[in-house]
Length: 409
Ligand SMILES: *Cc1c(COP(=O)(O)O)cnc(C)c1O
Image (tube, rainbow, N blue to C red; front, side, top):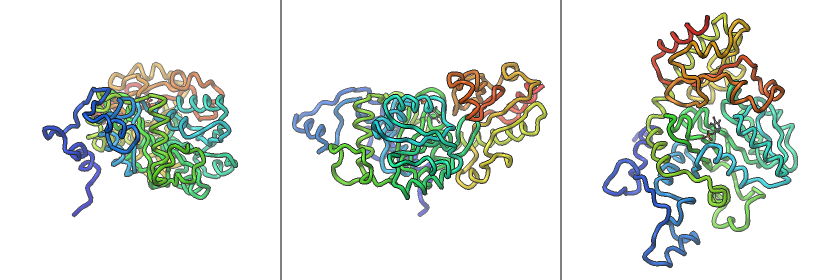
């Protein structure tokens, strides 16, 4: 019998726990609280001795079904869902780090994650931002109190690819927690567990939800890390076998205490969106490759940043690790072209900050999402003023090409 594939597993996941009336989609359960005929059962749920629901901030059946889907996609052991991708990142890091710890992060990071890590510094966590495209920079930054390394798969907007495998090897050797933000690739293009990542984070808002109509985020335990070696697990959560310690602490501290819970309506939208992830992302990646090649050859464009191009510094790494090269690319325009005029001449491509939508979106990066960070950090992150980022959608390629042709005058 062939192994169940990505589509099959995902499409049929909601029918696994005998759903009411045989529904094919997990129902949207809006109830915040749950009643018990026997008050002892309520107590047992609180004490973790019985499976069940007690309060919507911690658990909801619709959200549980989505968590199970993501766990299967990631081939992990368990996932916790949050209201946004940022809630997943902040809650994970705040529940696993404490003051006096050291964190190594890629210098090429989603702007808000970068901003959050500077907040961690205000709480006494020492953060080193390094060029994570080469493991030697990560290795050189390791200190005695280094607790975690945090990288993204494909960084936004200049599409640098972290030295994912080698960092996994380093973290494994030193027993350091390895957190990978898998948003740009999603578990369809890349499984962080294949490079020994401990936790995989997905902003479901982007490719997994895919329609720009719901926010959400998850953290998945890949099962690769031995939580018995992690010094920050609280005694309360050191019950049963090591494998559950980390995710339990994230669920209790990060979700229950910090409260960034995902709502059941959003969970439903994200679950439905996820059903077509492989179809959408395959087409978007193919469109992105064609557009990036067109831009690279165009005289009005100085540089094109896309892992699928031979000129990309980590092109081979991307080809080895990812199923496709992603659906994000950026261009640096020549002086002859103003980035605002360029975008304004397009009509199919929408000027918008989101990514992972079915529609193609473009944004002048330095003036918007990387404005607050300042010119100096932008230079360090490789973001020129004339950079425009595209999140490529699933329109007909000829319509997108026509838009680029007419805008590049
Ligand atoms: C968008 C994004 C996030 C944050 O997700 P939100 O749902 O918008 O909070 C985190 N990481 C990456 C790489 C992203 O692109």
